[in-house]
Amino acid sequence: MMAVLSRVSLVSLFYIVCVRTVLAEKVPAPENVRVISLNMGLVLKWDPPQSTTNELFNYTAEMKGWHEYETVCLSSSSLSCDFTDKVSIFGTYKLRVRAELLGETSDWVETEDLLVDIKTDISAPHVELRSRKGQTEVDITDPPMKKRNLRDVFGNISYLIRFWKNGETKKEELIREQNRVMLPRLEPLVNYCVEVEILYLNKKSQTSNMTCLNNTPSDEVEPYMIIVVLVVSFLVVLVAVVMIFLAVWYGYKGCRIMFPDTDLPEDLKKFLSQRSQSSILSAMRENTPVKEHFCELRILHKEPNSSQDNQQI
Image 1 (cartoon, one colour):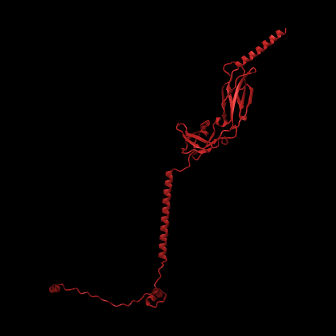
Image 2 (cartoon, rainbow, N blue to C red; image 1 turned 180 degrees about the vertical axis):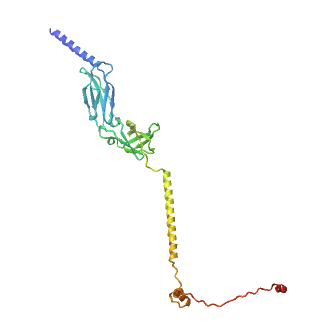
Image 3 (cartoon, rainbow, N blue to C red; image 1 turned 90 degrees about the vertical axis):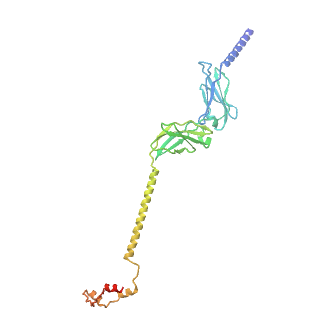
């Protein structure tokens, strides 16, 4: 009897070992294991084994930093595991995942060592356009990071700005470090489109959505109008200066005529200041006619005798 029980125990033990061996050989590892890092997040994704059908696998994912592996997702049916809260932005990590079925596990599938700040991708920035007085300004907002912010992680970043007339294929490019940029050489009342990428660590972010806006009318004066205004202003000033000069000159001459500066001789002043006793002045003063006295004077002219002169000759 004891021998029979021993044989049954051995058979059961052998059966269990064989079943576990078969199950272990049949639990395949996850496939297409990949690391997704966006905006400083860190997610491990995978696909279920393709060699099995209608099997409900569970998965365990772990992370290794400076020390041993640490389990982050344990026996989960999800096809991804988020490590964002467990990592730092400048750390180096290795991730791994395995499949589980009926208490059995597959082999680990490990990733290579990775640095989050090097591995991560940056999503597209948010872009707004504003136009005023014939100028269009691009306002760029960095995407939110899951750890810190973009400039804290990468320091100096720059923006690649492309703009073009709506409907045309030729694009102009600008690279600026400021997140507010005025687009140059725009025509008024023309519809322009803009897209932006962030430049960091010799990489580019995702491209923003195309944003379009009509440029407003310009209040700037055309160059030829400036020249015309300057010439007309110069002529007006010149004519005004000439008129003022002539007015001053002729006014001065008139004053000189009305109020001469030359003094009368002293003798003439003395003569005019003295009371004259002459009969002429008295008569003129009394308004009576003056009786003039005169003597008759005759002038005779003798004509030469032409015949006598001829004989003398």
